[in-house]
Length: 244
Image 1 (cartoon, rainbow, N blue to C red):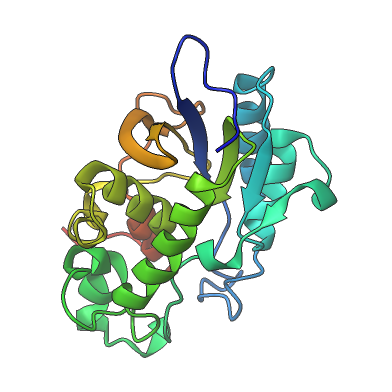
Image 2 (cartoon, rainbow, N blue to C red):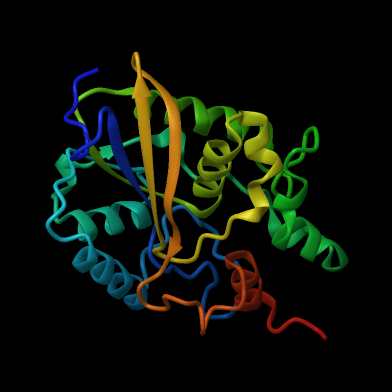
């Protein structure tokens, strides 16, 4: 494996793992958008990405990756300062696909739409009838393993999605793909958050991982204004405040 280790280390390199900037998944009438794949960053989302770009200025990314969804591509371009043709697209890292959330009965919406990740390790569990977590995990983690072992980079910027990032972080903490699903709901990923992961290698394989930073948001560094988790915030946009 050919890469220059981080300074003063033997065989360490770093992934800057981000969630895309803020988007809105509801239309002007408050209904879920028909096409959640192609939503763009809001003006606030652009500002969030610009702020992260300031914090990461001076870092040379040997490789920049997004999932191909417009919101991840926009964020990656702003943060890296690179044109589209120099950003790699990895479709296998795309977000878990939901089913028809409007068809979920009102009484089941909190469990099936907001807190659906809590049962991710259960057999055949899906996101409101969309992708099952087993197939989602297999797709994402197999590709992440290939990327993490690929040569010729020391600092990598990866812009993905909330559930994707949770899965990767859970996987690295537990050391197993099964553990990644069990711990999925324990990690929050706010809009345009930054995670910093260091990986140590031996004989071309990862033998240690370190979470340097998790869910850092420069626009709200100590989460004073952030009380809802991201799924709750989307639900709030759609159906309004939670009942006490």
